[in-house]
Structure formats: C-alpha cells, structure tokens
Image (cartoon, rainbow, N blue to C red; front, side):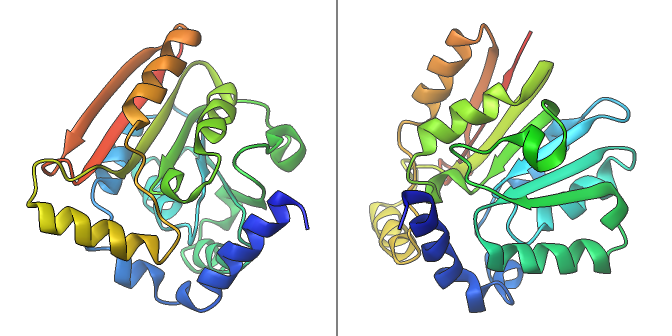
Length: 217
C-alpha cells in the first residue's frame, strides 16, 4: 500500500462514523476558524480553495460571506467527502462548489478542478493531521495566484494556558492522529521569504491556536 493510500485509509477509519457528528462536536474547540474566513476577503468573483475541507463546514460559511466567490475543496478522506457533498447540496451551493479527493502534499489542482491557481488557499485545523505538513504548505503556496494569499489556522502550543490543560489537550488530540505543529510560524516565515511574500502570524486565545497568512506579490 502506498503512503497516500495508507493515509487515506487512516482518515477514512477515523471519520467513517465521526463525520456524522464532526461539526457538532468540534464547534467548541476548533477556535479561530471564523476569524480565518473573515480574513480571506477574496476579490470579486475570486477563487477559494480549502485543503482538508472535511465536511465542507468552512466552505459553506465562506460561500455565505462571499456570495460571488468560486469555491473548491480537496480532502484525502473519501468518507469526509461524502459528508461534504451532502452538505453543499443541502445548503444549495453545489453549483458554486467543486470537491475532489486528493493528497495535500501532492495534489494537481489543474487535473482535479481544471484550475491552476487560486486567489485564496487555506488550511483550517488540517495541517496538524497531515504527516508531511511542511510539503503540504509548499504545495499550497504553489497553488496561490500572484497577488493571492495562503491562510492557516491550527492548534498552538497553549503556552499561556495552564500546563495541565496543554498536556491534556495534546494527549487527547493524539488519539485522533492530531499533532499541533510547534514550528508552524517558522516554516511559514521561511516559505514567505522563499516566495518573496508578506507574512502575518499571531497566536490567539492565549496560544490555544495560531493563525497566519502569506500574501504573494
């Protein structure tokens, strides 16, 4: 079994049943997702890609906030994409959204969507589940159009929260193959420098989460 197939199998195993209650159970601790969506501000008629789109919760909110945006979502889990497809159909935005299965570290956007570059690309609590997350960031940045932006929100290191809380959270997350990326800011800074981009990065909610963006020239 290839590494890609193995990762897809793991994700499908986790979400085969959880996908039905995912949004209900995650709404209270995936903090910063709405902040990211508010910061996207794509140009009129612009394209927005979410990598690791899961149930399409973020794509639905993005569609509501930016009614003329063209939306795309990719996820490695076929099980999650079942929920995503049902969600976009139920909310009446299926004509504006294209979904596809793909590996965040090596997807071909042109092959999947017949679109090479996007005005906005974002990760929302998915990098912490991608084994090759640095490669996924690089791949995502290469899919950003000139003048476009890459946005990220994910778990922080809980540095300003009680030690017991951070330790307990990380232990609980590990049960779901989730690993907060301590070097996320450094990796994004390096990528911004390589691509001559402008980096914005911050910790939020006492470092419960970290949020950042890279704008390309």
